[in-house]
Image (cartoon, rainbow, N blue to C red; front, side, top):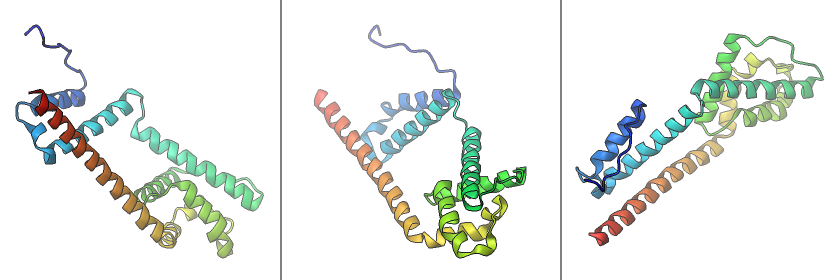
Length: 189
């Protein structure tokens, strides 16, 4: 009993949950079932990421706000460049929600607002001058976003394949790590 290491019980419920899961691994021999153990490791990684963001105050709301600010900043800069005028319209709450929806849709497809707005101002607007000068609300409409995604469907497909490859590689790496651990654990006993 003197060889056991004591550590305090975490106060954070998510961290306490993960500690409980890790404590149950050996008694239930989950570490000997690679098909399940790799998902426990993925859960552990997700919990670690969550705890890091929580401890360093990277809330999802702050990220949404930062992404929205980035969109507005890039839009205003490109607007000034295109029209030689400042964008003077006020950004309403509705505009903010539309920007968030566009950012989310772009992110889900592997893009960011910078790529989208570059396309809007360098490709779409020169080909469609009837939309000039653009308004943020107009740029956020489904016609623009859908057209962008349609014109970049091959890139979307390739990025989705890359994302799947990364997930598969992570799973293979975790399986290999599990096998190495179980092999070295078997040699010790």
